[in-house]
Image (cartoon, rainbow, N blue to C red):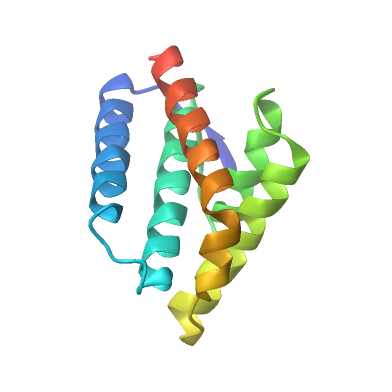
Length: 131
């Protein structure tokens, strides 16, 4: 459920720093751990997307919050339907990993890493531009 709140730039700055720190940490993780890397990409994207919403005075809560956070990116011109579908797929795979112990296959990262990094860069730029 999306709630209207007051934008909190200081909180957004903290969220951005956390996402950047997590991104740096990923670089030290070996490719032998695709599940850990993919889960961290998801967390970065979720955090940056939440920060973007917060800058617009919005917060998502409830059972389908993560799905709604990703769906909300449609409101921003920079994100294509393909990118949003990819992020929803990442969310589903991450949930299966977290809650059912289903690991990410190395081929997932080999095939999706570049676009996930581009999405992360777009989100960071969008957040920074609105700060």
